[in-house]
Length: 304
Image (cartoon, rainbow, N blue to C red):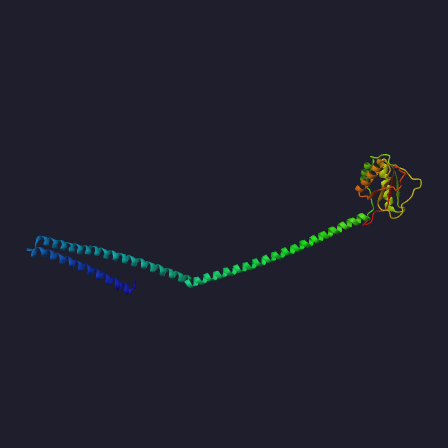
């Protein structure tokens, strides 16, 4: 082991073991001599006393002998264990020295290893901090983008609503200013409705020298003729004065039920195709007739 103090202790232990063994031998020899002397020089001692002395001496001799034998074995076993321990300790020191040598060759020590671990921990912490900062920035950018998107959505919804309002107003204005027209299909549809009242008499009056009411009058006159109604031309053909709007359909309150039904059917049919019409009853009591008078005024204006 290369330790002088340990080597000295080993030598002292070995010498003491040897002397202990020799001392035990001397005791055994002394007891044996005493045993022989007991038989030779104690002829006048009673047998019982002699027997007790022999038995006691024999026990001492056996005890000393056993101590010598087992003490020797214990000493040998202790010596072997010590040798084995020395070998193991030597191997451990050898392994430790080799490990230290290799670590030195690699430039590694506990201090440098601890420094490396601390450096790695700092790098990891810095990376985590950077990642947290980037995550915070990304979350803020996402939130800002969401706010901007919501504002854009609100602006788009407002703009869409305004455009829809403008379209509705434009459609209303267009409907008010666009000339009233009756397509061929609409003419056929209205003629079919009023054909349920064939032979119904009618006359038509419109505004003088105005193109839009005049054009509508011509189309409506054709519809009535196609519906098998009969034009009853008045003796004095007149024209409407200004201020009349829409189509006014007059029937006498005392006319036949068939005439009243025909007037109602015509008004509904014209309203159904977008031609504003209204049913009126003539203020001429006592002079009933079954003729329907139709007045075609100007197109109703905005707000009317």
